[in-house]
Image (tube, rainbow, N blue to C red; front, side, top):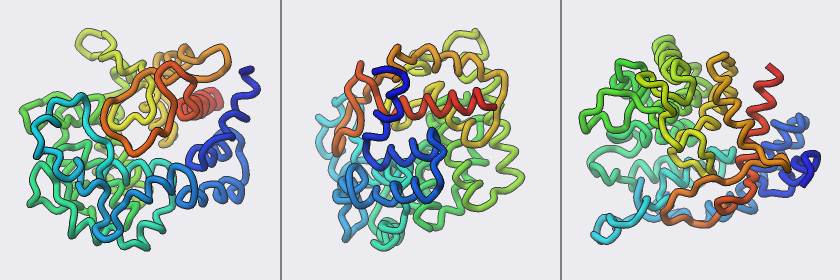
Length: 320
């Protein structure tokens, strides 16, 4: 595949991906990519995932974060990874594909989940109030804003659970006092959605700036203490990423908020270095666990999702 053919290849994909190619790589007028995006709930990936929702309860797989009954079988705890089919993951996927929330609002999804979704960690906690994991709460905040649920308590929760370094860590309840690359980026992504939906607040913007500095001081890739790459996952690009941090995902956050900083250069170079001769990026990793259906290619093959993300990050960086 010659480099000039890559965009044509990307256009021959599901509407959930194609509309982003039209908007972010081709600068098509809104009427074009909005028409493609409107097809998400009607065909392809979006329609297939919507079909798995129980319209009576609003749930996917009968559970909030894990499928119903998952913990009833001890053998499940020995499985690699975890299932990715329950409600929070399914909502997050549809939202991140850019689907308009109208079909779910018409199904009264937010109210049904308020009644029927119970956190496996503590079933007494209200679904739209989140639980104790900041990555789960980040998805809940963004999904709730999308669906029109009352998630007003969650921004305060994030402020109360910041680490001294400026970021967050999902393992705070187990005693961790250090911020995490994974957790910090997941919260930043949610707070960006909150800022766009509500206008944000000065105190939240200050928290976001501090968390971004936490990542930038580490060049999006390295430990502050030793300067070593924080983990192999930083340069292992994958789709769907679920909760996994990578230099590419971090750069895409900064692209979305429009913040360019010279401390990102090493991460940008890591993205450049991963490009193949044909102009694509490969699927480099896969998270184990049950899924509804495949949405990308096996490890080692050219990934349309990663290629889109990398191309638009590099375009933003070079245009800036």
